[in-house]
Image (cartoon, rainbow, N blue to C red; front, side, top):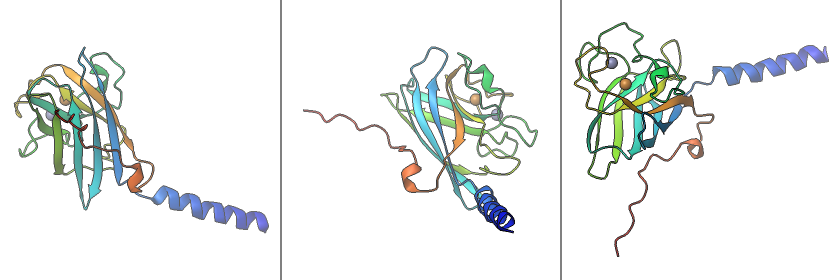
Length: 187
Ligand code: CU
Ligand code: ZN
């Protein structure tokens, strides 16, 4: 009888943990294709959408294609291992606002003269369920995404890649800091 109670107690706990929805995730970007690009991208569930925030450094000034790719594998030196754009609805490439688009088409980020770019986008993405982006990857490209050309908007080489991992706890302390590194004070 005691054993049955123990099993029941264990199951109640395990089931609770399993049922907890993923509400936060993050991807640490690593340099690819000979670049020095680095950064951090965080994802937070807001209602039925996901807020994407990030800070990326060491880019060339200007626009860079920014996508979620289908495979959570950044091992290749050119990030080819990350596969194609995340596209659960089998559509053509587009931009964040176009009717026809891959779910992973987040458009462009724009780096300033110092090579720093901020990411601030909110839209239809999931952190759980069959179209979850957990275990997929974030890729930053060498060039601007034209938001129309299949399969990847003519955005060139993949200069940074990071696997999207679920943040283990919802506590604020587990959220990565996405603010850009402090600019040195001029003297
Ligand atoms: Cu891409
Ligand atoms: Zn696309």
